[in-house]
Image (cartoon, rainbow, N blue to C red):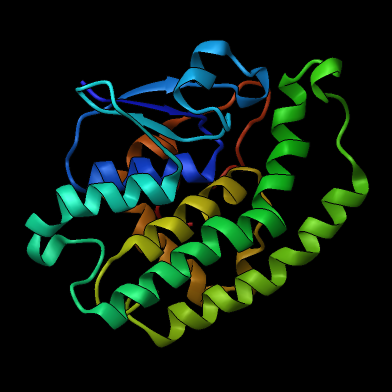
Length: 230
């Protein structure tokens, strides 16, 4: 069975997990602590980043964008109306643009620093950079959330799905990032009703159930995290 090296609070890992679930693939999950720099993991991905997908032939694919493109080229083309990357070149470009927005820009501005400060540092030793969260980083990241949620609300309010009329990688990338932030209680949903309605639809999908059932040691999710109607 293929193996996905991942971390439950990695938005990139969650993105790939959602793709695999939407396409009905069975995959073994191997939790990886990227700050440990395990020799065996670095042999798979010298960059030491998540996620890494190892197929049945023991070939490693590193990074969410690489894995998602591979899955589309090998399996997505056979899914017809369930394909998560559109056939039309311009539509594909828009899906890729938004996927990059949530997996790279939002990751850099918001998700990665908050996860590192609030979750990873609790599990890291002092030599690995662990310790109390940096209040300045928390403050700056939380300020950035508002702009990203405004953009997400505009997309959700003007389109059926974020990139058009069909569910796509863009929705899964955004939902992966939002789910991590929502776990930590970092989103004020009262200020983003259109984004909330969109997220309710996404988290109601069967592919989301494993994510909503997960818990991270030492960090309790916000009370509504697993509620479909919140």
